[in-house]
Image (cartoon, rainbow, N blue to C red):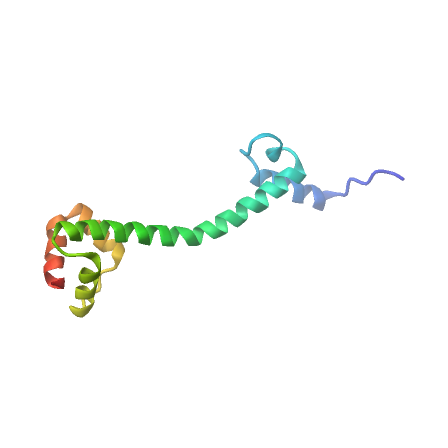
Length: 114
């Protein structure tokens, strides 16, 4: 029975996978089967971590706000509760940047919250 290598479509599919696997070490960048496994796993990780990145940044912002709030003599939960009561709508990302770049403005926001 003659060997069938398939045609254009199969070659295009293999080349697409190998292009995604470019830069991987060893056979994972050259062998189609290994490259397919590596690319599938990499795409799963990328999908998962696009969601995890949002969690990670929120945790970072909260840690920064908490540290800056403690320097101003208030804890994080009292600060956020006070801001909600005062109807100040500054998100955590902006509060974090303010705590780093403009500590005076952050201390004024803390005064609003207390």
